Length: 189
Image 1 (cartoon, rainbow, N blue to C red):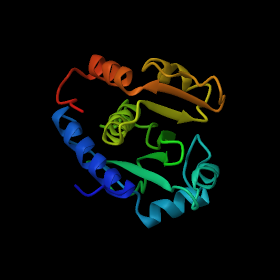
Image 2 (cartoon, rainbow, N blue to C red; image 1 turned 120 degrees about the vertical axis):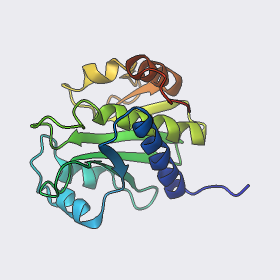
Image 3 (cartoon, helix red, strand yellow; image 1 turned 90 degrees about the horizontal axis):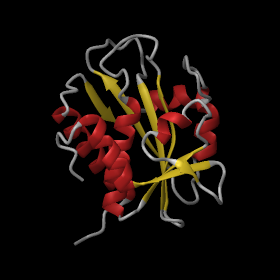
């Protein structure tokens, strides 16, 4: 069997995550890759954001090793006046065989929508698939904010002792906590 490229695995994980999203009954939410306009908005820092996306796009991009695996979550019921609803940046470091969630944010958190409370869950569903396909044991989160650490701890993420800019959790533990929160409705990896 031919080996898949990281971008092919990325596309496969998006498709699998969208299947889970549908099984969970989140019919108005879908996962995609960022288009060029959305990437330009993030690079320019031109979004109403709590986080510094220009910094993130610069920090996590590494053209010599691996590139950013970008995801955008769309709420299908909303019109196009909001060009970006939510973004998840991930990175796979092939030298270290390490998958990381680098940054995620719901840009429409100021209004109640089908996306409310789902951005982290969707990021973790995608992450567990990615790690399972590559046979990785842990999911890392890079540069977590102090405010977000309790949410991550609820999925068993803890400080990486040799790299204080990261926290990590075992994929099996993350799946356990996802199933506990969402039920086992199609959360098959």
